[in-house]
Length: 264
Image 1 (cartoon, one colour):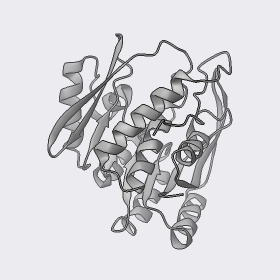
Image 2 (cartoon, helix red, strand yellow):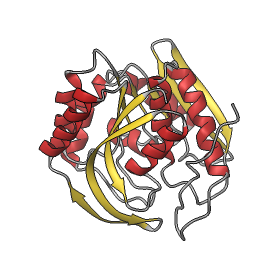
Image 3 (cartoon, helix red, strand yellow):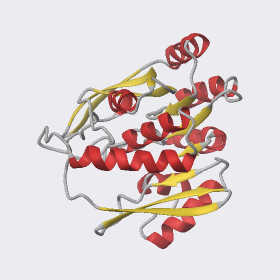
């Protein structure tokens, strides 16, 4: 077991996304997952029915106890749906970032389209958390929300990924899965430029939790000493394999196969 990741995110009762996907992904890739739960959701493959808040001071207590004892190589954030939670993560992360990296997955929408982030939290995310991050991993709707303009084309993506990098993170992975077409293009922007990663679209409804899974797969790669680029490459291969071998559960957006093992 190599690489410690503290995941600060919400729980998915269906097990396909959120904390559950994070733990399974990090474990499958040989890392150690610790968690600070920010919200409880009642959901299945058909959608999110209800959200139960976790008080910010309790989230802070979870994070502090883990970091003071077990430690972490990477903090990975997911569902931070209230401004108070973002402020909590910012304050605790500032005390520890000299010793670890921060990966921010700006979770704003569930796979079925339900909003998971309050408007005030969006502003806090952009102004306080994103500038601290070593890597952010928005999809196109999330990028559009952060920047205040829709991202609809590959050309839009190239503009958006540069604009996102200008907000302060060290790197941005802009995920292009929401674009139409048979190819999926993700863009990785760093101070050295922009690189495109292409893969064939897998025609399936079983893609619930792919964003959480990809971000956690990258996080554990970084925790294990991989460069951001190498972690992204491995994580994409893992997610593709997990989608291809999805178990087919549920009548809506079903979960992927987090037990998938890379061939190397």
